[in-house]
Image 1 (cartoon, one colour):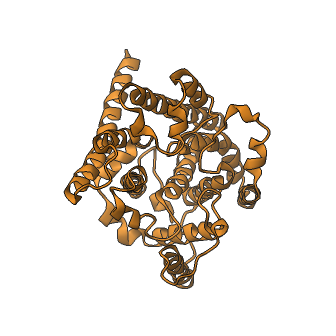
Image 2 (tube, helix red, strand yellow):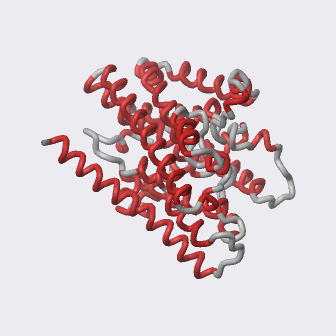
Length: 373
């Protein structure tokens, strides 16, 4: 990475926008075989195609990276108070978007078809009364499947100004050490022990992703983003040794992930919930390689559609389950669907993402006009 990729005066980085837009579409493809295991079987084959890595990890790292680019500029132009003010406002907006999307989907399901929303942890919510389920969502005591990444992101933003302040003081090692030790504690059950402090009658569910482990992706992105902003030249190591090593490791993880050698890695080492050490290494290799080939790949992924999704990323992510819910109603309990119907369903889901982004753009434009009155 180099400082040529730094957004100046609030402008956006097309390369980062393209990847975030791609992540949204891949995320939808990843969720289809989970929601409809008997229908989109061929998609389940390509899930995590590059190894022990999914777009969720990409989202979290990219969020930390972009946060560093944005808030470092804000801090230097407007001061530390502005960083706190904007970070808190962003965390508030993420939380509100998460609550509105979750409660709205629950309400829709209870009015139309509850059975179409019985995905993972959603099943326990739909079995409860709407006021009770909404209260659990609002208090964050129960975070349903696929959306729990949003409150986790909001939580990271609350700590981001503190870490960014340390990075501005060049305390990179301190920030990295704190993040690493927190990740290490997560490997030994820190979250489980904290959950045990709550009464069992509360029926707490903080989601699949362990925030104590996943924070290492966000703050690694924060470190890399800050380094990119402050460097006046390329700061990634040059030469061929590390790229070749990263390629070899990535290919090895690819072979393990797709069982090409018949060797199965211990789930604790490649686990997704706690970000096992080998999974973390796999992610680092892939991110490093993507950064190294930026110049060669930038033009091939540049598309205004990806940037459009990225511009409304929060809303697209929060409401992306709505088109999938509609597909759940259409498919019902069918376990065998012709390939042409599956292709149409995928197209419908992708168009749904763009529709959410379009509605978000209209709402934002109306709010701007309203505030100017």
